[in-house]
Length: 229
Ligand SMILES: [Ca+2]
Ligand SMILES: [Ca+2]
Ligand SMILES: [Ca+2]
Image (tube, rainbow, N blue to C red; front, side, top):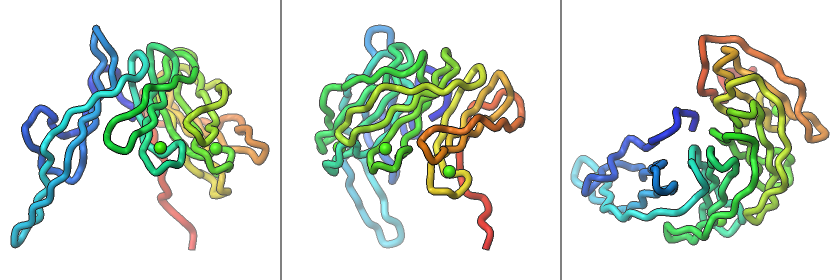
């Protein structure tokens, strides 16, 4: 998620007594007294009518503690136990938090791993093709991207930083050149540009290629728009 700091929430209103949507809701809140990743977990009930299937969410509210200033979150199964886990960037403590899931909507206490200064957005993928999920974070104050390689058990090795242009806003991973290796894209709002780095065969990244676009780009995403027959 590449957005302004502060409140971030889904389109659902968790304060309502019932929600009709095929989606659950995730709510992030940075308060003065505590910084918590708050998860709005819903039990699912299906009710079919003759012409329309309705999905109702009787609400159950759970919270899980992360680091200071949680900003972005990714969900994946880091330790291969079949239960979704959380990875959270903590913009004020310069870390990511890993919360291993218990499979019932609750999570184990967070383990933190150091990133560059003020991590904002994050992206996940298997950068070194060892089968374990790795993490990259965009570090706004440091103008760097931190790469943390996963060990497949919810822990990560020490960060390796890549320098970027100033006012970095967002980072994404995707295979841009079709070689099977994940490449890196970042948006740099002060430079009005998108930077691309290709993954090399030795696990390093190439020097950056800059794409100039509109003014102050904040978000970037990767998709295949054309594939030759
Ligand atoms: Ca898991
Ligand atoms: Ca990996
Ligand atoms: Ca590639």
